[in-house]
Length: 153
Ligand SMILES: CC(C)(COP(=O)(O)OP(=O)(O)OC[C@H]1O[C@@H](n2cnc3c(N)ncnc32)[C@H](O)[C@@H]1OP(=O)(O)O)[C@@H](O)C(=O)NCCC(=O)NCCS
Image (cartoon, rainbow, N blue to C red):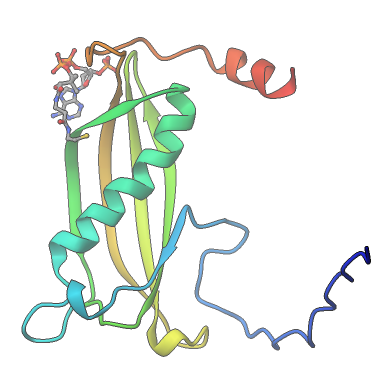
């Protein structure tokens, strides 16, 4: 039996200076399609809100080391329209932690026409999640040290 060869990547696509946040990884990248658009061809605000909720829940879930529920959308601003075919990047950072709650700031950038040279910030929002147990009641967040230790063990 022959072992398949590791494919050799083709020449890298030249990169240009982008308007995406430097040194940060998006939590989510997704491209809305025709079913996500309203009758005017712009993407539904509700679709964008759902993706923002998912993106924000990812760092919250890691901090909670388990399930979370969204308790509040503290602020939400649609700064620019989103169009079918935009490539969206969702960045999410924890900005506040309480006893059971985690507040996350989410920024969304659109690559218009999938071009890195044409990037606009389309949305920003702040959401609060609560760590919950299997009983769906609030649960105290684990100490941050326990998460670091479990990641190294
Ligand atoms: C999330 C839920 C379990 C919290 O239970 P609760 O008894 O209301 O929670 P509490 O009043 O004890 O508040 C829990 C935390 O949320 C915070 N909180 C409550 N209301 C808030 C608000 N409007 N904005 C920001 N934080 C809020 C509290 O300050 C507390 O934080 P802390 O423990 O860090 O101090 C309950 O509200 C719930 O099930 N809500 C529905 C969740 C849901 O279905 N989300 C949509 C799908 S995921």
